[in-house]
Image (cartoon, rainbow, N blue to C red; front, top):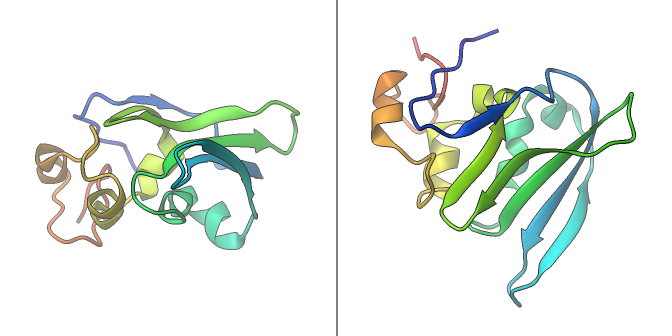
Length: 133
């Protein structure tokens, strides 16, 4: 497992921890109110949970919750309010790319050029929080 390099100061959690389970999202629709929606579990999401962050228009996604298969509890693994990302899970951080951040979260606290430099990211395809070789 790759080591996470996080100089942005965003709070992290380790709830997903490569487990399988269900995801649901809270999105802000064009009319201005929040909607909860379940996300279909796919092999792509199982291997890379950061793909959920790319499923909605920029600024629409507010939170992602995860329910591991062995529990009935929903756990927040990504939350943002306005321009601040309050928490993000380590499994999402391991996979998130510069392109995802630049396209969907360009005005938030995880958009940080110093962070990209710290991990050696040079293109949008590079990882944003793990060392690029």
